[in-house]
Length: 431
Image 1 (cartoon, one colour):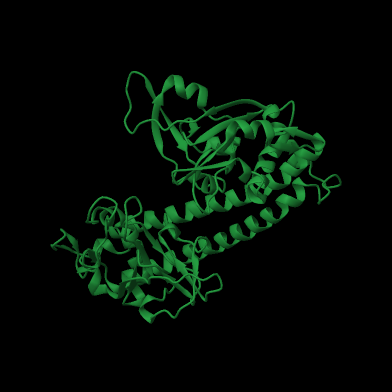
Image 2 (cartoon, helix red, strand yellow):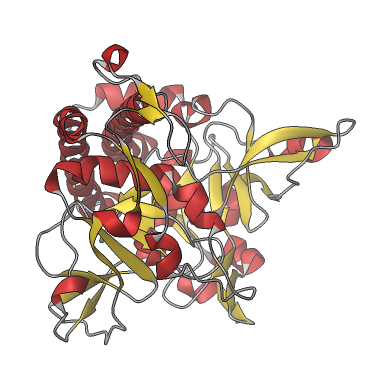
């Protein structure tokens, strides 16, 4: 049975952006999920979601509830269609300490649970985005893609199998999402542990045996005896911008761009291919620190690369930094991540053309610990990073399997009627 999407919707409303600072009389805080946040929030990564302030009257009608769908209706671009969707669960809302709403370029969509299983309808929207059914509702204007909402409500059809099948399809896919989210939460715990140890050892100087090490003066203030204030350029064997790529779909080299660098990590998911030879100094190696060095909003972001050994470079908007001494690689990477706020402030130039100059990066001063302390730190932290890499690999595998199953389950190519999914059914009933 195929039903018009609009007939399944009991409530929909546009989101809002709010303000940075509150009006104490009329405003209340709420987190705002933007279209750009949807892919990360979907796997449990909430770090990019901003806290804003909104009129209490607006918030009352726009706060997300379990079973709601956040649907992106504006802001698409070439190669990035509008129409991404996010399903709101109890677990997601519980991870925020304030109400949550969607941004003004999105809509809150509430499906009538008497007519369809909301989690199943969400999966059909996901499939519609992937298979191109949503593209006919796209409208291009002034370089931004918008969504033609009213025709979509009228003409987009959702194929509804029996309710028990809807629940089981949603249950299978939700179970996979839950595993992905658990891995993300383990990653967050490991990374926070590593940051906490870094702060204890290298900011508070409470490293093992610190009681027996005198504190002496330095250009950056008191530091442990035997530690040195050094400029980054003096500790780096490579400090260079990347290449001007010649993109080619079958190119040998993967080129990391600024979108690949976020939250201290580097991903190759958004990298593109390049077909020409790359000079040795511009070939990225595991342990290299990559810094976004152009533009507003992304400039100064730092990530440590821990991907493949061969075949990876960066474009000219990214700076490669490589520690001279192998013993300091772990400390070097985490030190530059901790200096991200400083690097963000170092940009110079006109609005929209801000650059992080190589000379400014070279002159960044750090308190370098003694070699034994750096080695002890690496022995403690490197296994955490290895576990993070393992979990990231599992997330990629689970995501690929889920994406492979999505069209087969929603279109009925995989029969779920005989599967023992009592736990999933019960979970969906509770939602």
